[in-house]
Image (tube, rainbow, N blue to C red):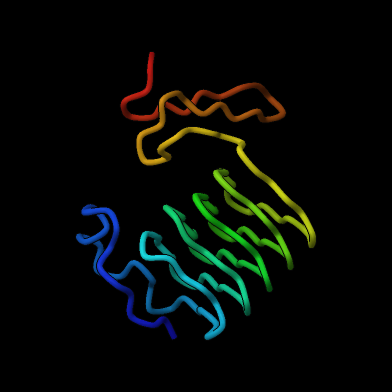
Length: 136
């Protein structure tokens, strides 16, 4: 069961009724920041730290002893044990095994106001993800 949080760091988060969805499972030894969103049926396991403008999509799982700041984790994505991930966008259905470190895939000073677009490389080409306020 999710524990109550302090006032959100960003005013937009104050408008969200359940920043940690009632069906999400957060273990008691987890460290949770004030400015994140945890979706339905998401799970954060023992000794993990999730903070800093992070979104966990529906059914996402953050494994034992993971460090997850400034990251978007898509629906049904699984982070195994001891994953360090920072400033990263992970889509739906991603699976990272144990002992993986991912950093600065999209590095910008303020992830809430990116200074450039994000490019996704997929098997069939590159896709530009327009972000508000980025250069054309």
